[in-house]
Length: 84
Image 1 (cartoon, rainbow, N blue to C red):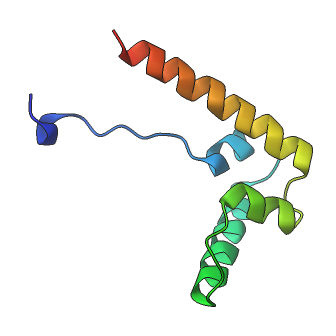
Image 2 (image 1 turned 45 degrees about the vertical axis):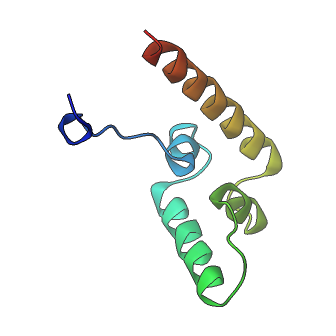
């Protein structure tokens, strides 16, 4: 099976985890993404979405760490599962 025949898989993003954890709404994530784009358009360096969300008080530091731990666990599980 070549690369174009492989199914496209969706990898959950930080915002998905934030919403699923109940720390914010999808609207909050969309607002953070708009802020992230605006900052980049104004010449600021790229800022990770989790940091944007903390900086603009959408989530707090503890929630950021919680989400990152869940993401790390989930991605490690996917890596183990795909090894065969």
